[in-house]
Image 1 (cartoon, helix red, strand yellow):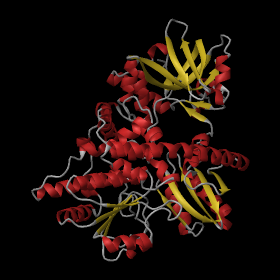
Image 2 (cartoon, helix red, strand yellow; image 1 turned 90 degrees about the vertical axis):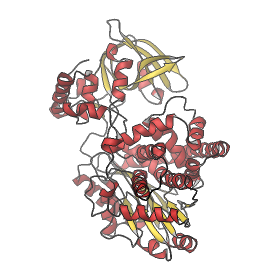
Image 3 (tube, one colour; image 1 turned 90 degrees about the horizontal axis):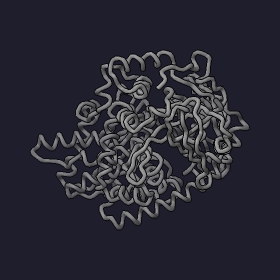
Length: 590
């Protein structure tokens, strides 16, 4: 392990790589992080690679043991820290005790579906059924609407809005005759709707300390408080720990930052999921051919997109119903349908992504905001395409589908830039018909004739937050690593610093001056390598999609040349043997 490197702050690219084979500038740890990593290594005795990762995550030496073993017991906040929590839990408990008619109004994404499934599961274990209502993305749009809420109120005593409702003044007022409880996390306005309770860590009158929770985590906290109230009344509620698989899925899929209690929720939820007790997730894992213990990667890139597929281009409530399903055969049929819809979604997404990228490049990729808008772009894929543009450019991105006089769009942000607040400000200024969200994601509706000024203003607001200051093609690296130091023990140690995801990127290392002893094209676009340090140590590597760009051809035809390599290290299990492997992302001539 090498413990030093030049960083962008010093004006010198890491390993001197200003432009790699994929066109990126390599950026290493800043001097402060490098010193913090050295201090961690000296005071804890932990592996240098792990210390570099902990330093980047801001973990001081004294807190390292607790950080590497997070527990819900230590990190779960008191639910009553959130306003209206006691009232919300009491109303749900009374509805159960009185066998009242309950409806759940949920958003159509993974967070909304998992939130709804949590409530359905909890109620079912107490012999109580609930009506699930998820609006159609195209016909009804996001959140409660007047007609749906009025209809639900006619036949139900309690409506629980999950992952939506904080800005739904009119629709909640339309729910006459029923009590409404909102369990949400989207940014609140200056006033709240006239609901019985609005539990939301991002209300204007909250301190923001729990603002990183997704809606399913808010629902979970409400169930914790409900369990407390039930025990005080001499009743025992369901086992909440068994439901953390749903909370973990929602947390990762909704790009909630994996820090604080979110780390503990996801880590424990992955353990629950590995036990394969929830038929819907078992069926979804099987149809996706997930043959290893689930990780946060699988939640975000394998399971999450399939749950989302119903809300994007199919039946809006299919994902939520799958997550709540108890019959394995029915769950398998639903999972098969979602898998097919996900394949269809990828095809639609590919077409929109290609058109959006061309447009964004013509407009320029160096502004604080990258955006594109196109006629008839499917509203179910604009959010995914925005995410792809964000990843490509390291800037907030918005993609809008135009239809008639208006456009509906979705945006994704980068760390440190609050997109939801800026979008909501645009709505208050009249440049958007509607807009809202949270720090990392937002949705909006804009009149066609206001599109250009709205995006210009949004770019201005985001620029003031620092968007666009980083290089569009920066590749951030934690440290240098020699092939001999990349072993299973280090990878297992690094996993203790996870789970990794939004707000806590997985560690990425540079392997300097490596030789290539074996290179072979695998399938249509992948490359498999064996690399070494010239001193006898070797390491296997895989570069997925390498032949979709310049990386594959250059490394396959290496001709004995040596390269600096960059990527993440992982465990590759084959025929019972576990070996370290580099998931190669980039390279540059040494």
